[in-house]
Every structure is written in C-alpha cells, then in structure tokens.
Length: 538
Image 1: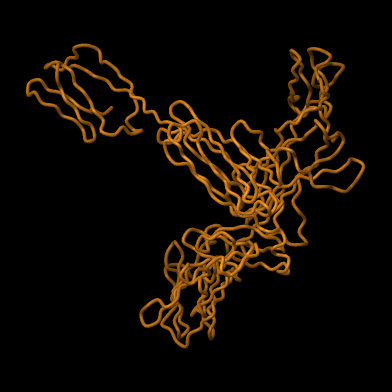
Image 2: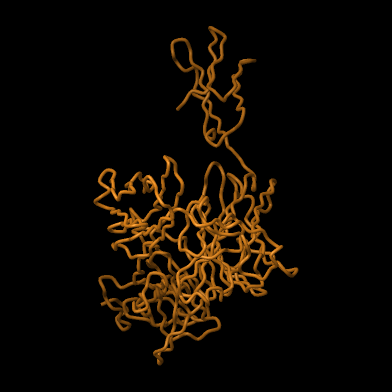
C-alpha cells in the first residue's frame, strides 16, 4: 500500500506524490487527479492518526473506478494480403474497445462492393458464415480481453470472393459508442490464374497494393499467394526473397488488372548492383547455401551478420575471418566473383535474415539481405468427430488439429461414401480456424467445423482430415492424413424411450445417459464396453 497524500496539523502542511494534487480545508483532505490513469483504479483508505500513533477511528474506504466509453480509443484492422479469388483467404481481424468496466458497444464490420451499390455486414449477432453476391465471410468472435482499462472485442474472419470484389472496402467500427472509432482498408483479390505461366517455379511478383513494395504475390507450384515482407523490407521482384528497401528491385504498378500506363506511377528500376545474393529453400537440418555474385572489379571486404551479431568477413584475397565460434555453424568462401555463404545445419535458431555488406574505400557500397527459407513437412493431424452429433442438426463442435509445416500449410476435410473408395473435398457450412501457433519450427492449426445433417444425408459416410503443404511436401510425399471416422449420428430424438442408459450408435465404448429428455454422452471407464442388457459397462 502506498501513501498518496497526508496532512500534518502541527505544521499545517500537506504532502503528496507526483501526479496528485492535495489540499486541506474545512477539516477535509481532498485528492485531485490531474489525469486519471488505469493504474489509479482501486480502493483508497483515509485514516486519522493521533500524536501517539494511535488511530482515532477505523479507516474510511473509497473505491475509484475508471470508466471508458465504447470507441474511446482507436480500432485495429488487419487485412491479410493472401486473398485469392474463389478460395478461403488468410485470417483477418478487427479489434476495438467496447467499453469499461461495462461492455456498452460492439464491433461491426462492413464489406463494401467496389463496383455496385452493395454491402454486407458482420457483427457479434451474425452467423459464423454470411454470404451474398459472390462473397462468403467466415468469422470467429474471440473472448473479451482486458488491457489498460478497456474491454477489447476481436472478430477474426476469412474472405472467399470472386475477382469482382477486387478493391472492395472493409470498414471496422465500434457501434453504440459516445466516441466513434472507425478504421477502413481496401482489400485486393488476386486472380486465381495469375501463376499459370510460371511453370511451377518459385518466384515473387508485384502486388496491386501500393505500400512501397512490402506486399507481393508468391507463385509456388503454379498457385498464387499474397504475402508481406517483414517491416522495413521490400520484395525483390523476379527473385524469392525480401531485402533492404534501398537495394530492392520492384515497382508499384498494378499487376492483376488491366490499366493504362498513365494510371499509376512506377518506381525506377536500378541498374546492376554490386552484390546480388540468392535465398535458398531447404529442409530443416540441411545445409543452406547462399551464393552471392560480385559486379565490381575490386573491393575491401564483405561482412556477413544477422540480428545476433557479426558472423564473418571475407576479403578480396579470399581470407575469411570468423567472429566468436561462428565457424562451427557457418562457412564462407570466395571463388572468383562468387561468395558462398553456408549455414551448416538450418534450424529454428538460424533461419534468419543475413545481411551482406560490401565495403569499398572504407565505406559500404552495397547491402543485401538474404533469408534461407526453412521447409518443414506437416505431421499427421488428429480428427475428432463429437459423439453428440445428432440427425437434423448442424452442430459446430468437431475439430481437426495438427502441425501443417513451414511455410504455413492448411487443413482440409474429405469425405467418401462408405461403398466407394474415392474421396471428395468436404466444405462445411460453418468452419473457422484458430490463430496459428508457431512452435518447434512448425505451424499448428486448429480447424473447428460443423457437419450439416439438416439437409445432407451423410450417415454411413467416412470423413478424414488432411494436412497439406504445397511448399514443403514433395510430389512423391504422401499427404499426412488423420484417422478415418464413420459418420453415425444419434437419432433425431435420442431420448424418446425416456430416462435411462442406452447404447451409443457409434461404438460400445460410449453410451447415452438420458435425463429429462436430454442425452448425455458418457465414456465407459477402464476401456469397458456398454452392455444394453445389463445397462452397464462390462
């Protein structure tokens, strides 16, 4: 407990801490907060103390409650650049303050069509999937979080739209607030055939978004992906890496729609650079070799570093000086006009940005950043079809979880008729992805989805989950696939026979416990099997 202010009668003086004014008049000590902060919230006690240090009476208490209105501070809108036509996009989110301590407002997200008078609105009262006019939005309302005396509401969502929605607007705002807080942004839809002529090569192209070359289109396996460089990095068009913006080669031209040259400005493309490095793509544990070509007749030396410090210097006479114990992890050499830099064993700790600086005349004449892409293959996912699955309902509580590799892959569902061997892609009417978790050099995804038994007769069909990654899986690699689950739902009224215990239609390791016309799924203890005659697990 900290003393905020005090009054001493013998000296008729008031003392107070910084940020709090205090005065004493008419036998009352008054505190005045110049600017109430979240840290000021709490209980304050007032105590009268005699000269012999005895308390005259029990302390009087007063609670200070900080309040903020909905929309008191700004909202945050994140638009993921990975939006490809007729495909579920990467995850976007809207985050905003909805009041404190009471929640008095809510978030609302509006999607505005760029060409016609049409919009679609999403809020906490919307269904998880809304659609119309060639667009489908799937959303997840996150639990409230408290920070700095604000209740923050967050809605995460994905976009699946036609190319006609290119340059549509997303408006994120807090509704019912005394303070209006709004943030908007334009989203761009990449043509699904953009990479058809790349012959499955890995290559980067300009993105339509003009943000000083930070956003780009990655062609991989003949398919386009919207990507962003790290902050303060720019894409090197025609290569497969981002680097220092002062040396990157890119333009801010529109590449996904037809326009005239006068409709946009282009950044002049610089001539040949003194140093050019190529970023490799290798698997975890392999050697990553970064070759750099020199376009100078002479130089002093080349320094190589990462965010952990200097690694080595390579001189024109081919001498290599290692710093610290870097020679155990890295290797460098110069042959003719080519510098070879090797990461001996690429892993989570050394898959970093490496900065190559060319020194000439005692100054840096060229600087290049290369980043070896570490590929990690996905792992077999785990599929859980909830035993509460019931006929005539669309229940959204089934999950598929697993590591999808690096770069981040995806989880997909497939279904087949029990009498057939061929699987077909299954797209649930409702599905959502939790925020990916990056751990152990791998991305962990959780897919929550529904099985709609209100209109589809899926009884007796088999469902499975696949962890796909077009960037880390080779053509000959099998796609990691979960266990196959037979869809056997509960009948539409599983407790029609009244209270009691009944067999579960899927297997004997579970049983139904009916009480007041509500069916509860129970598990037999110790791996037992439910016996309908004995009405017990044996």
